[in-house]
Structures are given as structure tokens and as C-alpha cells.
Amino acid sequence: MPNRYYEVQKQSYEESLQDLDSRIEKAYESEKAILRDNREQIQGFLDELENQRMSVTEEMIQAYREQVAPYLYVTPQTPLTNSDSSGELGTLTSQYLDHAIDLDTYIREMDQRVRMMMLEDM
Image (tube, rainbow, N blue to C red; front, side, top):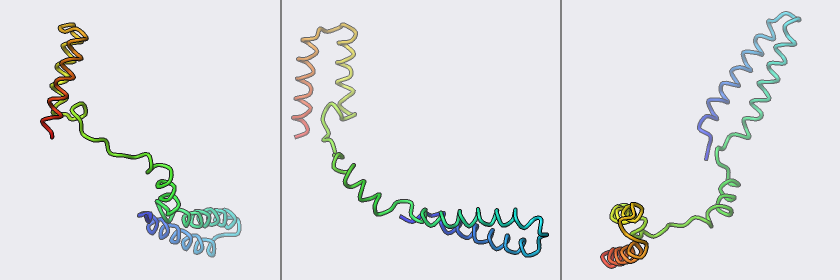
């Protein structure tokens, strides 16, 4: 994937180099060393910019495919992960946490409701 800022940066560096070349020609001898140092620095930036031509390289894509993609998967929708049905199950959980029902009742009711929801989706 090309770096969308590459061309703009390249043009800016090239213009800076042209400007420095012009200034070096016209500068006093005492100023030329500083201007040449600045030019070297800008030239270094321009040379390094070539390494940033691509935001995402083929090697990066290949590494992603090998190291990340095998571990990605889509989880199926269940009553526990579905936001529509999780509200109803949340109510039951709240009753248990508020000690309105005991653990056995909670498990039995949860099991019954999840089974009903799964049968409704079939």
C-alpha cells in the first residue's frame, strides 16, 4: 500500500535541496559550511524517504498472513453473545446476584431459557 504522503514529502525535500543549492552559490564562505550541513541532512531525509514509500509492504502482509490470520475466526452467535437475548439472561443473573433465587434455580432457569432460545433460532 503506497504511502499517501510520499510524493508530497519528496517534493518538499527536493524543493529544499534546490533552495539550499541556490543559497550555497550566493552565500559567503563562512556560511557555506552550515548550508552544506543542512543540505546533507535534507539529502539524508530524502534518501531515507525511499524506505517509507510503502506504508504496508508485501513482507508485512505476508507476515500478517503467517503470524496473525491463522488465529482469527468468527464466533457463532449464541444466546449468550446475542445482545437481544442477553438482556433476558441478564435479568436472571441479576435475580441470582440479588439473592432472589438460589444457585440451583439459577442454573436450571438459565439452562431452560438458553435451550428455548436456541430452539427458536432453528
